[in-house]
Length: 222
Image 1 (cartoon, one colour):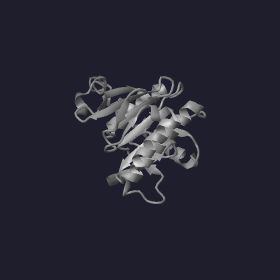
Image 2: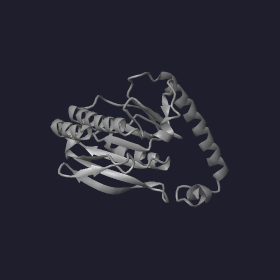
Image 3: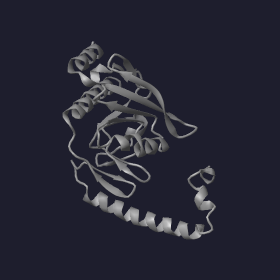
Image 4: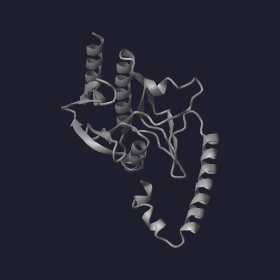
């Protein structure tokens, strides 16, 4: 229960708890006004996120980041087209959680969730599967608040792609703790299988090498 959490204990034990609660309510109200302004300002193509009350503007991605994202997105899109079990979206998809708004590199929604999407949908629920490609400017956020937030909102699987090491960290949700745990760590010599995108198994090298990617696609199309 939240009342037993270490986060709330200092407030619950503080004789000024009523004042602190009022201050928190004021902060929350102001943050929601700021978030509403964010929704008014953001335009298609903007690489903005709203995290803990702040608008975060991202710099352009490096080539190694873009290539890894595009290859994996292509593989996921192809697999889901051949096995209609859900939909894949990319970095233009605004995921609106309880407090924060993110633009993940790649997301997957099961058919159960995606059948609720409409042509004018532009704010999306927590995905079933999220991929983030690490960079120097985003690594701390990808490993920090985003991991915590996606897990708290029920995302089942989370991949971190490291273009420099050509490696993938695969995290799965622990339902009891509402947190991710490291299920596997793979390198370019390994294969990796999603536990959420049913049956999708690829060599890690296909994320970083065009020829390997196309070999996987040709095998699927046979």
